[in-house]
Image (tube, rainbow, N blue to C red; front, top):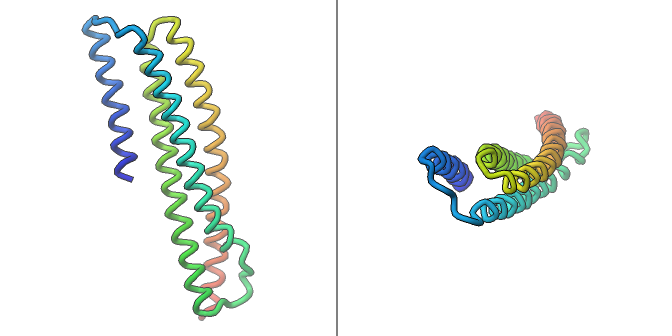
Length: 165
C-alpha cells in the first residue's frame, strides 16, 4: 500500500515541477510531451492490470463464501475456511480500491499537465485521457460488482456464524 502512496506523490510532484517550469517561461524539451503521453499510457495499462488482478483474487475468495448455503452449519474446519475467505476477499478488494484511487489521481494530474501542452501534444494527450477515462469507468463498474459480492459474502458469513451458537 505504501508503494501506491509513493506513486501518487510522484505524480503530484511531477505536475508541480512542470507548473514551475511553465511559470519560469522555460521551453519544454522537444518530444517530451510524446514521451510523457507514452509514460501515462503505460502507467494506465499497468494500473488496470493490478486492479483486475486484485478484483479477481477478491472475487475468488468471496464468491466461494457467497455461494455457501447459509442454512447448513459448517464444521470447525469449514468455519475457519469461511473466515479466511472473508478476510482475504476483503483485503484484496481493499487493495483494488487503493490502486483504483491511484489510477484516478494519475488521470487527474495528467489532465492538468495536458492542459499546458502545445496544441499538437494537447490533442494526443486529450485522446489518452479519454481512453484512460473509459478504462477507469469499466474498472469502477467491476469494483462495484465486487463490493456487492463482498456484501453478500458478509451476510452469508453472519448467517453461518449464528448457526454455530
